[in-house]
Length: 472
Image (cartoon, rainbow, N blue to C red):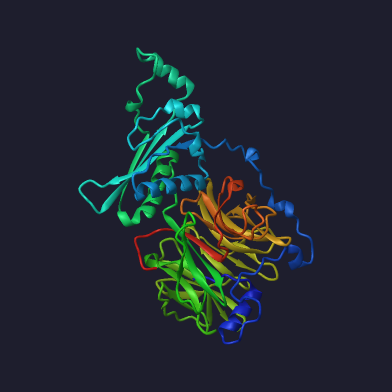
């Protein structure tokens, strides 16, 4: 449970929550982060934020390996779904350069047709992926999703294969075995969700680190005069609203049992903690209006921010036993990380990101919405800073070192959320990125590969791995 807003907005929202009518400004919307110049009356040194390399050459990143996905002749709905989901997830993953299906060697391709890996290599593919659906053995109500990943032969390995046989060709394609094989069994009504799980297993087999696509995002967005919570799949599909239509909802967070918790105000009453589609109340003995919330990864701890008499107070605890936490003025938007670490934003007139009580964001820049990202290269803190008339996504280590810019001069880019596998960052953008406004996903090591997955623009974005819980 957490507080998400800067001081001016917190006061405005609290006033409306306690019964005052809101102004013409949207009381639930996240404010545009002011620039350091506006906050301090000076000109911030933007060079401390760094720049984005358009191809990663300055970071020494190797080219992405090229992947071909076999355009199989689909035999049913499940077959079509798994092929579409796997291709989209692999394109979003930032781990492979996925080739257009028109580059495939001549077909046709079925579930079992032999693959000429040499021909795929000639088309540029270093990896070949074939996925398909088939009825589960001895269970008519379930479906098996099958994924086979192959390595294509280099010219040298193909020559050695020819030398090892008495023929002038390599071993017959029918003898080719996949380098990695995965089967995901699912109910026929859950093929899309199971397809994401199959991708996560394939990424684990090919890269050594399972993917994070079996997950969902949640955020708040204005709808008419109200504000609602929404959830959406990791690939931008299956958008659905959560909670009542005639109230103001803020700061969704995934809590115990995989339920979505959020702060809710009805008829301008103080915001109270609720969860699920029915907005079931959660009794808490804290004073004032709850404006934001967060849970630790194991859901055992929570943090919230309470607004009372124009001041915000950070509370933390476990098992419902919450106590106020000493923090600089206007502490808000707490976020839990590994090893008990906690981040939040605090300070006046310029808010900075704090980790374990110490400021880590660049001084002079208004910061907001920190989140921990456990990446393959180590633990990072990702947050928004105001830059000029816009806002950018920045990453640092947990001590504030190694500042890395993930967006640059492309409108307002806000509310970062990290994928469960730590390789992707989602964020909202106002539309100056050449793809229009919406929700974007970018590889944290290759942010120039950001792709738009939805036209929705909201705030308080969260991204969590799916659990077995239902009824959100």
